[in-house]
Image (cartoon, rainbow, N blue to C red; front, side):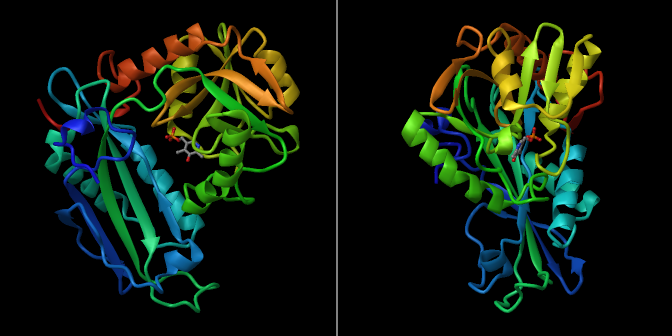
Length: 340
Ligand SMILES: *Cc1c(COP(=O)(O)O)cnc(C)c1O
């Protein structure tokens, strides 16, 4: 594992560098214990821990940005805390206390402030919660103990501005029923097989899951269709993760007069749209990444001219400018952690 001080770390791949300090809190005897700050590193875990057998785990991902005035600001942290609590409830894990988790996040940003890169980089925050009760007989019983850890990772560009090749898989769902809106480890393990298979066969970057011809999302990002003055994306339900970036994008676009439609999207409609429209993936890591090609039933469908769309670039720039404090925070999305 590299540390932020390694010179090679300057453009390291997303998530491979961790900041030196993490926050840790334990749920024991029916309550959350006080959090402590520790050097980022190994934790002791019993091999019978609930999470290792029964996948009782969820996580979050969001960023803190260093603004030009020297302050460091979290983007929509309240939404992410609320989503983590929702994920915990869905998995019958002890629900993190919102105030305690917020304090852990703030403390993690503050102690690691030297690890926050200049824009366009950011400090990516990764809280993770998992069941630790040592009981291999607990397949049908929730974990009574849990650990909550907040990791931080300096990140640079994720997908960059290269148009993505997306394989459209109309055979598989991304996740088990009801689990799509939960940010839980098993979903990513489940998407890995189809994603690697598509990469081998079609050199695709990601898979867009569309079981029965109904568009869901990719392994870790929401899917949006874009054209002049209009956005179209799947409505929120339990099949997809309720992305904060998706919500930010739709809110921003609406405020700029775009018509925003949220409903079911059929693969045929999507392929028709992209002949002269745009498509993009939205998520904290990617922000808004343009799609260049959709591969469906062995056929390549170019999205527009095959490059990242102009409207996609404009929307991405508007969102990034807000995250970096370059335009006014009209929606109250930024929380200062370190003052100038
Ligand atoms: C995290 C995630 C997203 C994006 O959510 P954001 O809140 O925008 O970061 C979308 N889809 C999946 C499956 C995810 O795990």
